[in-house]
Image (cartoon, rainbow, N blue to C red; front, side, top):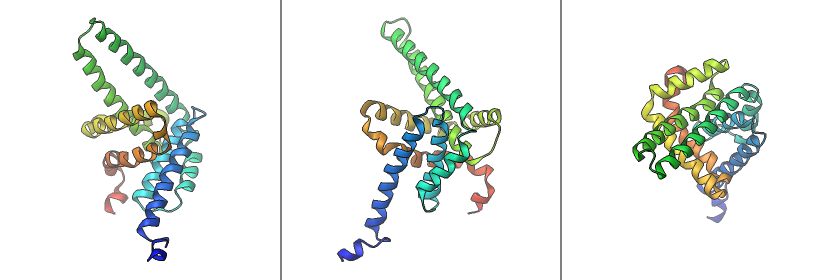
Length: 207
C-alpha cells in the first residue's frame, strides 16, 4: 500500500507535485518582478503557465513559464510602466482621500466610492497581462481591449479586483504569502478571466 502511494500517478504524489509547482511558479514570478520593468512579462508568464498546466493538463509548468516570459518581455515593457504609473496614482489618491475622511474634510461615502472605483481599476488591470499572454496586439490596442473587456464584464471585473486586492494586502502585510499566493491567485483568476476570453477563442469554446 505504501508503495502505491509513492507512484507518480497516485493522488498523494499528484498533490505534492502540484504544491511544488505552485511554490516554484510563485518564486519564478517573484524573481521576474525584481527588475520591475519585466513585472508585466512575469505576470503574463505566471498566468499562462498556471492556466495551461493546472487547467489544461499540460506538463512542465516551469518550462512553460520560462517560454512565455521570453515571448512577452519586450511587449510587456510599456504596459508595465503604464500599470505602475496608474497604480502609483491610485495609491496616492487613496491615501489622500483616507486622510481627508479621517479629518472630516470629506464624508466616508466619498472614500467608499473611491474604494469601489479602485477595486474596478485593479480588476481591469488584472486582465492586462493575461491578455498579453494570449493575444498579440500593439500596446494601445492591448490597453483599449483590456478596458473594454473589463467594463463589458463588470461583475467578473469587480470579483477579480476584490480577489487581487485581498491578495496584494496579504502579501504586503505578511510577506510569506509571496512564496505561494501568486500562483494560487493566478489559478483562481482564470475562473474570472477565461469567460471574458472565451468569445474570442472559438477553438477553446468547441472543446
